[in-house]
Length: 82
Image (tube, rainbow, N blue to C red):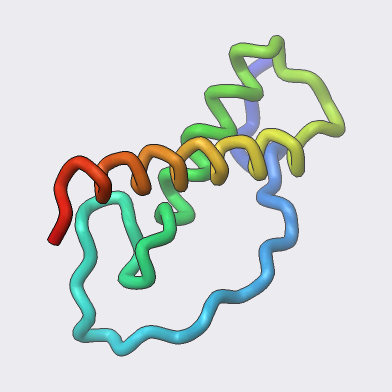
């Protein structure tokens, strides 16, 4: 069976504070320093595939991916202060 990309859904995520549209951010980050939705989705999807495509773990995969990316961003900020 072919994987349907729409079969994996992003869990409900609380909205973040709005940021002016002219704010710039490094690639993979939103202007408020959080990982982009696209990067979190990609990381969560690959975790899903690596675990054998289990059903019912979307929220766990999403939260783990978001946490991992936030840690990576924080480590990068520590090694490259502005």
